[in-house]
Length: 127
Length: 477
View 1 (tube, rainbow over the protein chains, first blue to last red):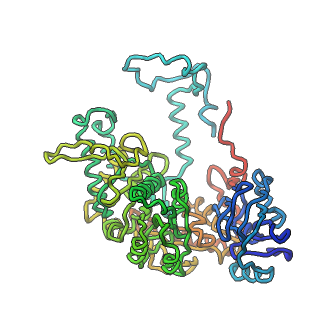
View 2 (cartoon, rainbow over the protein chains, first blue to last red):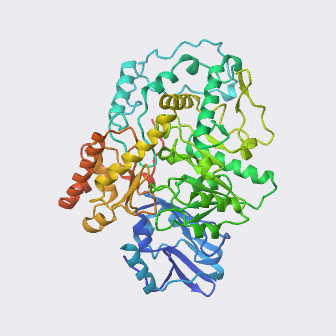
View 3 (spheres, rainbow over the protein chains, first blue to last red):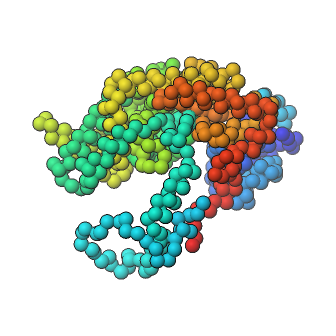
């Protein structure tokens, strides 16, 4: 289980990488993909869709379950990683490369966890 | 084995279809086929062998223990089939005049009466074809109710995280937004979270009680009152009714609308045949029910209510899967008032017995007593030996037992959810417990042997990921 030191995290196991002050990329953490198992389907929003803090903006499906993906920020979808639609396994293979969406015009964000805090969270949940 | 199309040989055939006994009609050319339908050409004996071979490769309640949690795979009594096969039920037409089908209408009338008594509801529709269809129908009733009062701001349905996966899906299909609330430590609804979630935008709450971890929510009256006080309605998912039928009624718990799975609780075949998901409701929702509701005159004559102008319309053609209702009514009449209650009590007893026989080995995240099902977690065994819930499930196949429900509910990691049902004897339960224990020991001694399971089934471990990522839903020939 790895935690990328260049990113911030949510309690619901999304990572967020700030590109500049009002733009960020969001994806699923290594812990999330390992818990979900092999992903077989990804449902992504469309460019222009509004997203809000702690609201679901996408869902991912593994052979075990379908899970919502929650937004750590309020803003507007400015790009989606369409590559994942045909190759959801990229999330399993390289969770920190396989971003789901890019969100711009960020006006609000939840209290995010530092890599160290997130690592501790995973250790607690993994017990 | 071969597909039936691969058994086909040019020129072969059989005459199992009856001769056409109505005048033949020519369809207009634009809707007619240009080429004959590509059907297998096969002799009757080979058809028979084909389906017998298929049958031998499956596992059903007639083959062995089938503790598939929340699916209530109880035995289907043969008398149900016998009654449903009576020509008065099986050889009728949905459009024939009602005075020629009084017995059939009586079945629907009686089934409604008894199922309303069991659920504490006032009216019922038999149109929905299965559970999720019932959920969708029930939610449309809730939607129509709020709309009829001009209360258009109620757009949200609250669903606890221990709900059946179909609940949020049905709510979205019915045009609602889902608000998910977490369960408390005890697996029940977190009352504080519920109070925070309700408001003027609450259309209703969907709840399964007992819930998917097999616990009867002790705060049920407080839960339904909280939703009612906020102006919402309460929806009861009847998937787990087998634990409480004849003992406690959803209507008395504060629910306004409920769906039943006749193919679970009322012993009609589950899987491989039509289901039935009737929806019952309290008086306040009855004007919105689908049309085709059976009425009974004072002289005992059955007919149909005039369509309500406020009805949500039809959700299926005619009266739903009628013969399934015949089987369910047969079951109710066979058991009677005492028998229905006894079935629920024995279902709970059997689940607790099996749980007690396994709880020293298998981790039970929610301490008993349970209701009709219980959840085990294979998380400790996965950590210690790398053996997962999937491995245990596959190993059970080698012992002639259908695995419990896997990886559900989602709030329990590496979950196996077992529901023995009331029809299993103590010998079957002891045998199953012994098998579960042996497999556990095998996991400690030789984990690899479980990764390799199953070894005795017609096919070994299937590539579920490959099938889901690259599905091939069509066959070309």
